[in-house]
Image 1: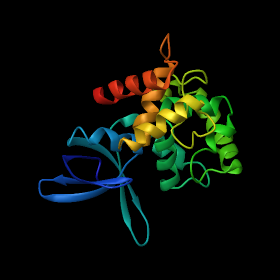
Image 2: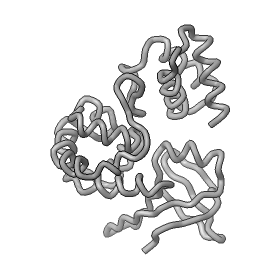
Image 3: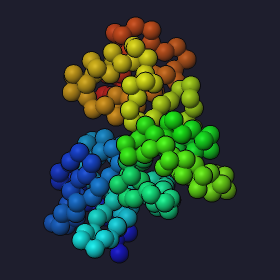
Image 4: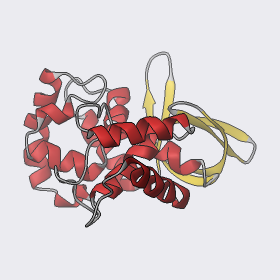
Length: 210
């Protein structure tokens, strides 16, 4: 059983990468948030979760033990397979998932691809009590409805100014998950930008630092 792999990122796909470990290339499926990080850090260690089926062996990689733990936890819910669990971790951070489930926020959960109303309810029903007994699963930081938004379909959650900034930055070649993180950072400022030019300028500054 593979528990951890350390190597050089050789190729990056839409939801995966090939990690070169001493000449052997491992195809590893990873959350979108990790894809952004490996673009600037080519040598990484991944905590590996191996999913074995009759016709395939698939590796899922996480750069933190907390994400790996959440991956395992989500898969204990009926109807949540490996791909849906990965999608949830691509859409929400562990802290956001923790808060959303405890708040029984079905409307936010269904913004993740592959999660319908019934599955959202099942996630809440089966995980809420377990999360209450495991506060460490929240990790660092907290997601609040006033300063953050999930990384899925955010078209209804962005202000018109944020939508314009998102469109402009995507046209400049930046990836949507990175832009959304920068917009979230700006929301937390004591004096958020009030004009499109200021918002784009501050986003570009944040993107250059990350």
